[in-house]
Image 1 (cartoon, rainbow, N blue to C red):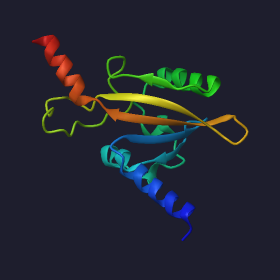
Image 2 (image 1 turned 90 degrees about the vertical axis):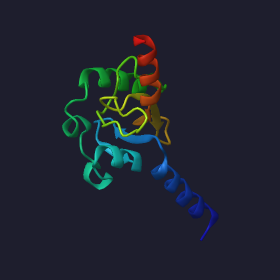
Image 3 (image 1 turned 120 degrees about the vertical axis):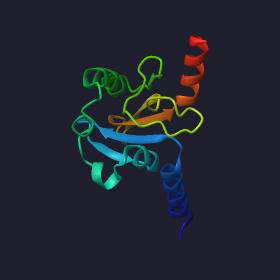
Image 4 (image 1 turned 180 degrees about the horizontal axis):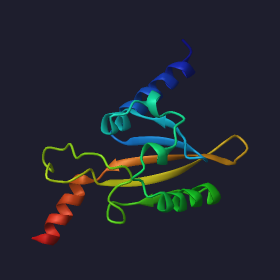
Length: 145
């Protein structure tokens, strides 16, 4: 096995096992990549969601808000961010953390990353979803107490 193939295999293994959600969308908002974090929290396998529309699979996503954010990434070839304080989540996942079990859902921070092809044109968008529930609950409890 060549070193490049071995390194690619390692990289794919890391992506699947990250404690961060990774979704790649094309310009029509069809899902191209869906990692293990996303499978665990959504209950949907990558094979079930691949080539499916994000808004059709998850109708509770605020389409107008997300399209505005994503369009800026596509057009400007620049990252965009959203924190749980701006919008609690992109995809409503159950909170699974034992310490913050009282949270009604998983609070999420997002990073949207442009993915360019070999010509430099941004053809896809990566979304990284970070579980920010612990931070959100801590800050929320401090504000209330």
